Amino acid sequence: MEPNVVTVSFKVSRELEAKLNQAISGRYTSLSEGCRSILDDWVAEGETKMEKKDLIPFKEWSQERIEAGVKHCTSRHKRYPKDPRVEWISPKLPWWFIREYLWKPEGAYSPDELQGVINSIYKREVPEDERFYVHFGKFKKER
Image 1 (spheres, rainbow, N blue to C red):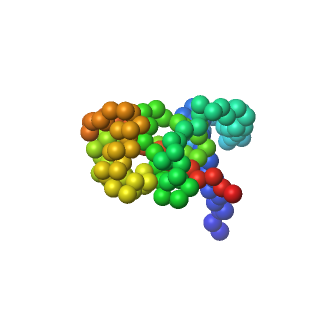
Image 2 (cartoon, rainbow, N blue to C red):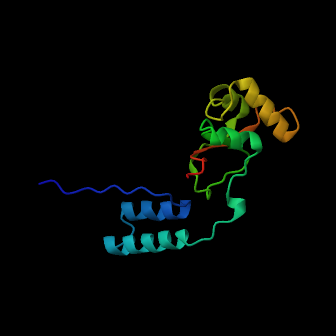
Image 3 (cartoon, rainbow, N blue to C red):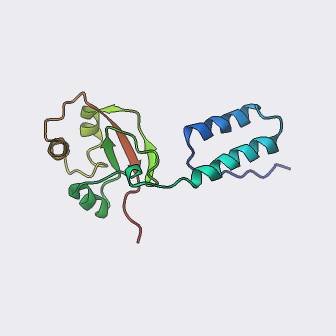
């Protein structure tokens, strides 16, 4: 008879992820000790207060595209790992790659439109080699 398997998925910090890996690799002397330590940390993480600076801010152009359901990612110089709307953050990618391959999930109708939007945000011509973290997630407010 095969054992029942339950898969649980939730966001964790790097520190908690390290503890999970330690538990899996056998660092803890008993499974209950490892689970208790991990769960205590996970609960403590959930109790941290969300601050406005933890949320990705969006300009009007992006808000319109989010509400239209066509914007699924956003490129930023800094990471926003605490934003609950973010599901995954890429490593830093060069702007040329984002413009050429991610213009549609960014909510633009063309690579040229996306270039114009980012130039207006930064009030300068954003060069091809400038790097950004791309945040993928569900940014539309649920009603």
